[in-house]
Length: 62
Image 1: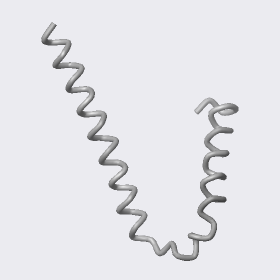
Image 2: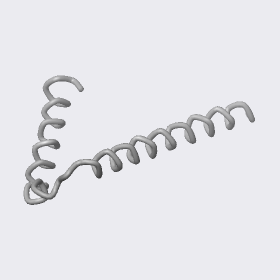
Image 3: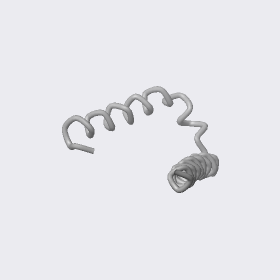
Image 4: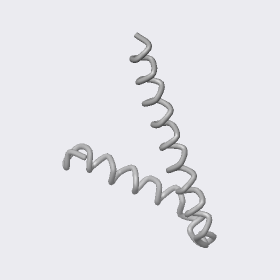
């Protein structure tokens, strides 16, 4: 039983650390860009990204 707990704990910690690392990379990468002109269109861009991801899941099997 301790082996299972060790395996689950290792998997959980690794997964969470990977997700946090990817989010931090995205945030710092985004901050390198000059996005003042895009601030006006943030809602439209995010809606388009969500629509594309949804269509990809439904029709392309992503």
